[in-house]
Length: 294
Image (cartoon, rainbow, N blue to C red; front, side):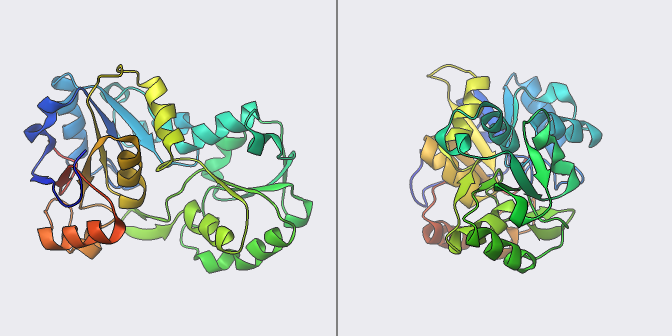
């Protein structure tokens, strides 16, 4: 693992891929923007397949993995371009179904959900009763804002009411924000982080937690000696998680950090700006690349 600001700036994965046995890809900000794939991403996945490099997906998406796969297919990203696809929602879903973890075992049946309809797959086959008020709930599931363009402040009264009852909250997406179709919007993590500030009990699932990588690697079994490369765009999730797991990571600088780095997708930032951001966040990267490209 490269330490500090000692990293390599590259123009594409083809420059370094011979060093690796497999790749773990983030989705939002790397492969697509939640609406359409980035112009170079499908070509890069096709090139990885042609080069014989297995690919797994690990995404902080608060829904079942099958929903993520279906959405990728709708975008024109063929299923044969990658192997295991793990959404953070699937990790939470598995825990909810099993309820063997002590935190999950204590949850009651009555759940109030905060988030869009597209995340309802989290309740498939679950022994829960969905309720509409904090007063009726045993716990909260937050998968995102009810409306994509809500601010965190919209949920302030709800969060205070939940804290007054000490309701536990499950957040299967630690991301604070994402770029969707060119617009910056909040994610579940922003709401859950505010609840934590208020003293609320939050259970997080997804990157950067080690459990997310463990879940993915169990499905993507390349053996203990395999050399893996993670490709992601977020320092707080993709890079932090890779650092914790001891994996090499290529930061797509044209993703969530493009604006603060002053370098649009497909271009590399000034090294000084990237060094300053890495020092400020305490993160380490192996490579910087302007886009997920070959």
